Length: 250
Image 1 (cartoon, rainbow, N blue to C red):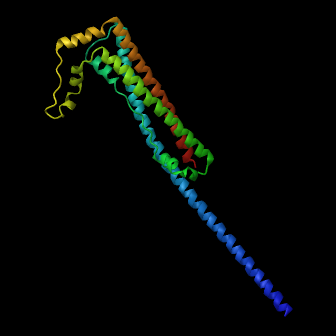
Image 2: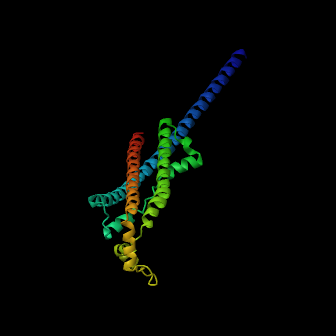
Image 3: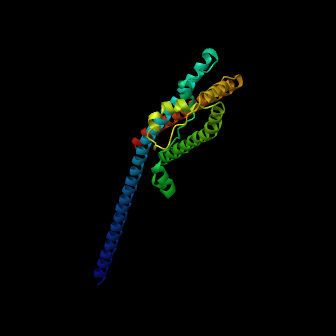
């Protein structure tokens, strides 16, 4: 009986050990599967962020092209004035000067980042270095977006446009430039026809010394603003490429 009891306990203990080992193995497998799922999710998010960053590069290039166009338009007007301290009030002058009233809104391409932040899924990014770089990148991009947005609204819309309109606006040249586009409007929309005397009044205002000074200052300011925005884009482009390279190595 004692031998049978001893064997029974040994068998029972052995079975318990096997059960415990089985549970531990199952837990290990489950943890491994969970880790793999989390890694797949993280990889998918990183791939989506890289996709967004490549689209961001396209947006940055477009912004750079526009800012360069503004800079060149302003440079043309400044160089023209510096030749004989007079503006050449021809169609090119009005086209370039009016072009400077436009501005390009910088757009951030961040659907994946927005999803991570708004849903609280940012924790899915396990690599703390990657997470910090992504957070810092988009925070800096948001800062640049606000700078350009504020400059467009406060400095271009309220400063340059106001200064330009104050000295007269030759709509005739604009309609000559964009006549084909305006011709597509419904027939009841007609192009305003300014009389020659109104155009001459506009020119006489611009040719006054105080007007030339104010307008030249506004154009120069617009040129500097385009240059500042362009430099922001250069930095953003460099940061974007660096982050893409870093994430693609993961």
